[in-house]
Length: 220
Image (tube, rainbow, N blue to C red; front, side, top):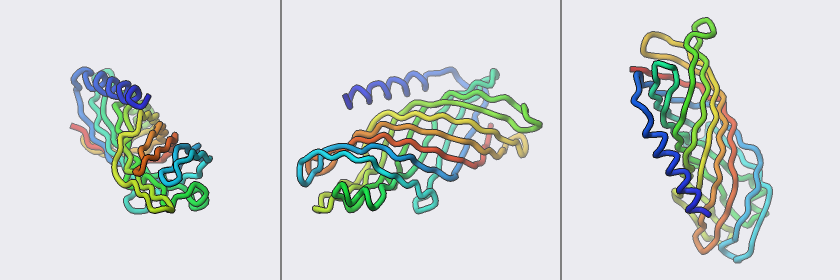
């Protein structure tokens, strides 16, 4: 099942990147405030070997180091339809109460709950008195840095390709001149994560983020 998810995500990335050449390129950097709702976490504990399942409270802690941020490259066509790629460095910390209940002393994706997607977007230039609204969606993969240590001392620490990811974005930008623009947007992301734990364990969880992003774009 895990390899099937990866094949779907890889096929989506390949097909989208094979899109038509662009008339204009735009590079964007952003940061902001990112939160996560609760989600179910289940798996097999590497110390005791038994199954576990719990509804976990996740914290985003957007400004704790390393902070939440993202980058996007878009190739815009004359039709104002764009194709591009986007990287988001989100974060997810399990609450202390949930970690203790599950038998972990650390449980987080905080050197990046990293999401990489291929996007398609639509923009409406100067629709709102100089502001250009836009909306889009993307499909890709989650590559989080897993930091999970059990109370028995078994530690998993490193990047893993954990499953498919998706995003939805809606926002508006304001041109400062013919090259630079500022923007604000709402972004929703979804990822299905299947994690391998050292010592023979595993865990699965769905992570959803809601973010308000503010950033700077450069076009050429």
